[in-house]
Amino acid sequence: METKESKNADSFILAQFQALMSHIDNLISSSTMRMYSVLLIWAFSISAISIILMSNLISPENKKLLYIFIGLFLFFIGIYLYLRQITSSIKVVYYYRILNRVRNSYAENSSEIKKVLEGLPFSDSEPKNILDVFDPGIFLIPVLNAVALTFSFFACFKKIFWTLILFVFILVLQFLIWKIKENKKLGKN
Image 1 (cartoon, one colour):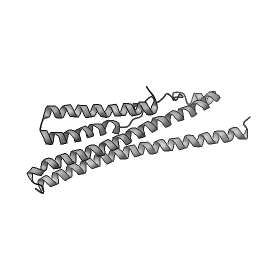
Image 2 (cartoon, one colour):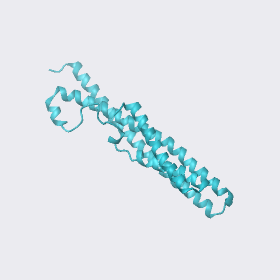
Image 3 (cartoon, rainbow, N blue to C red):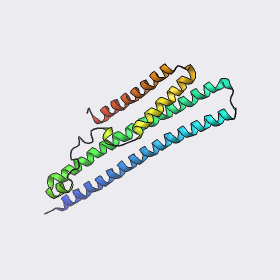
Image 4 (cartoon, rainbow, N blue to C red):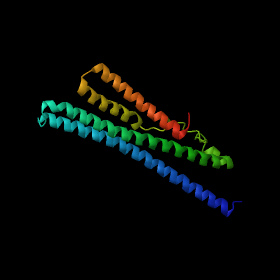
């Protein structure tokens, strides 16, 4: 027989479960909007460069400065959005782990619930990392950041080999930032 206290506890847990699911949906939605923002900023920047170059509003000597400015602008905006993207993804993983604990507590107390929830994770060790939660921005934003910075570098120095080395270095550096931040917030995998 259920007591009033256990009914209140169940109601509270279910309300918290729904709140967490809503929060996860909001985080994923904001992450998607962030990705759209990056693509829009890129589109506007490339359009601006095209318009400026076609209309001869800038002298040939200042074209290099324009490329450098636009490349650095895109890079720093991209790094900021990438760090926000990682933070959102870490929160999503963390909240999914909490939901799994709630699921586990109900499954332990009822074999019927356990049968219904079969196939879903019950432990707070899942998801293991950000890759277990799909987020296209985690992959696209670092590539765009590397392209932006190498664009500026190439505009200055016109060295293809060193531009490619810088591109790879920026990609690796961003991956390391991701893994360090992920390990710090979610624990070692």
